[in-house]
Structure formats: structure tokens, C-alpha cells
Image 1 (tube, one colour):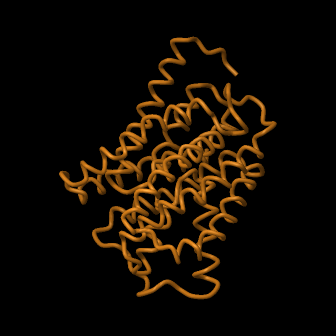
Image 2 (cartoon, rainbow, N blue to C red; image 1 turned 45 degrees about the horizontal axis):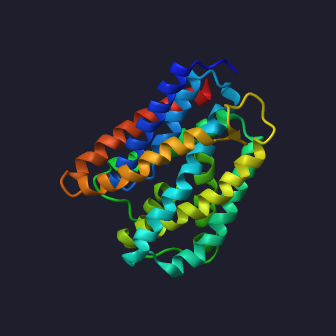
Length: 275
């Protein structure tokens, strides 16, 4: 690991604060999880920090997940007060989402950084395309029953959200919407899913990276504590600002702009993962 000068660490701290500010605004503005922004930004910053490429994506994902824990608590409380969390859906899906996220966290020990990068790139690409579509995709009038609805879908959301370092909204909202689930209840319920995903996933990434070499200073497993604290300390304040801006700006144009950003980001992640 390279020696860090005070000036460089100060620049890094400012970069983390800016990341948190942007992630918070976008989360409130567009209803997307901050992790979809935090992970690629951290991945790029860690490259300049000379953190070995074989662990840089693990640290980016784990650190992003750590920021989701306090954010999702705040968000879920807010949605619960408004009555927008579907308690029956939460009770039905939470156990398998939890198990899927735990498996994803543990599985990170056995996946190369390039594999995590590819997973992020592929799913981010699909999310960007979905956001750019003029109309939401509708597959059916209700959620599937049986193994698919109560097993495969929640397990998929938990597992891949953990491996991408994102909360519940990025995958669960479009999936629930595709089965005609009311959008406001999908967003509200997804806020609670974020906590169900983040806690077991973070524990898994801490375990899998406990003895990893060349981690950044003050890391617990793959979680960079300074980065997580700096990002969250700003995003918690900027998320409400984004929510207020959503009422004065055109959300359709904003979603298209973010879809373009995410599309370009996903291509870069795929390029890095394949190279």
C-alpha cells in the first residue's frame, strides 16, 4: 500500500463528501439507491489510491452496503409513517431476501474483483435501459405465486443487491412494478428491504475480507470505515433536498439523464471487468 500524504487524504475526504452529497440528492430525486452511484465512484477513486485491483471492487461494494444501513433505517421510518410499506409483502419476502444477501456477502470471498465488476456492469446496464424506457415494463397483473414469487424473486433481489452494493430499490422497485405492484408501495417497501439486505451482506463482506491483505487503513474486513462515515454524513442531509427538488424539476428528463450516466458507467465497469 502506498504511503498517503495529509494533503492527499484531505482531497480523498472531500471526494467522499462530494460522493455522499451526489448520492443523497439522486436517491431523493429519482428514487434510486445511492449505492448505484457510490460503488462506481469508489471503484474509480480506489484506483487512484493504488488499492490493489483484486480487492478494490470488494471494498467499494462493502463500503456502499455499510452506508445503506443508516440510510435505510431513516428512509423506512419515513415511509412507514406515511403508510407506504406493505407489511404483508415485507413479512413474506424479507426472510429470503435476508438469506440471499447473506449468501451474497459470503460468496464475495470466493469471487474475483473482476467478477463483481461484471455483475455490477451487467445489472446496471439493464437498470439504465429500464429507466430510459418511456413506459414501465409490465409482465403480469399480479405477482407470481409459489416458488417464483416467494422464493426466486426475493432471493435474486437479496443476493445480487449484496454483490452489487446496492439497497432494495434498484432491483425490487422495477421488479415489483413489472407485476403491477403499486409504485408508491413498491418504493416504500423497498426502503425496508434495504436494511434487510445491508445487514447480512455487510457481515458477510466483513467476514470474507477479515484477513485480506493490502486493505485501506481503518478497514473492518472489506468495509472502509472512514469512507462509509464520510459518505453517509452528507447523504443523510442531501436526500431530503433531492426529494424537494423532485417536485420542482421534470422527473422524466432527470431519469433519462441518469439513465445515460448509468449506461456509460455500466459500459466502463464491463470494460474493466473483461480486461
